Image 1 (tube, rainbow, N blue to C red):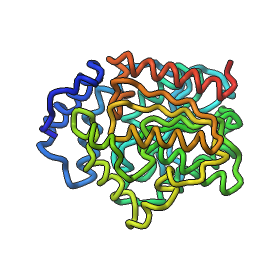
Image 2: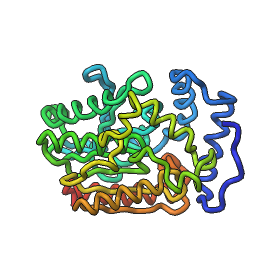
Image 3: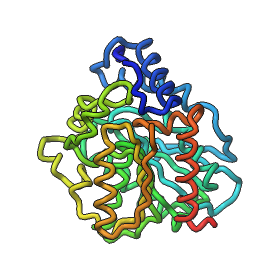
Length: 317
């Protein structure tokens, strides 16, 4: 924070503007990253407020608590039996919420013509692995059993998330597979945190001009786990898991991101395990670029492509 450098020429100009405005907004609230996680979350919510506003209206939006966790349902049309995307927000397992990602969820709902349900899972470092994962899996199981009461078709359900949320998506599908659970229709994975080990892209794209720094990502990993040993757990580091018999995946990769190389490697491992994969590297995009949808055509293109994939996976066409 407060160390923003001139934008890399490789970064899409609209994304560069988005990142610069984020950095400026952060600087208005703090000169350095707050040590207190509650204060950090408060600032993160304020900074993201502008970017979550606008977007498509919904026929129904419902927010409620289940087992002490806040859930939000967006329904784009007043029609029962819509298929559903269960969405898990990113933020290094530490920050963000269904509020920061509200517009993103509404965009998927409107563009794909599906219901979207988001979850406010418990955040680190107060709640460490496997608490958030357990909450995601338990909520998925509950939705599968009781989703009809919400007017959604949970026999046509996909899971999606960005960054740490993509990590939780894969881990939840691994847990369900190993427990003999039903196969979800698909995994929508954007710039996911799949491997705690740094790769070459950490050197190329670490810095505030790319929204995510290597030291920050390392702190996120270490804040999420209970001990160093957890970093070897395949449910923490899915790139180490047996990936066979997972749902088909859309892997959205930002070109200018410290996680670029691990996302490419993860897509390779999914394919090697026999999982159908659609992957796209979004040229000029940084980590979190989807949140720039209000100003960046590349973000809107990604939303359009991913929504079309969701429609196909959920038998909408």
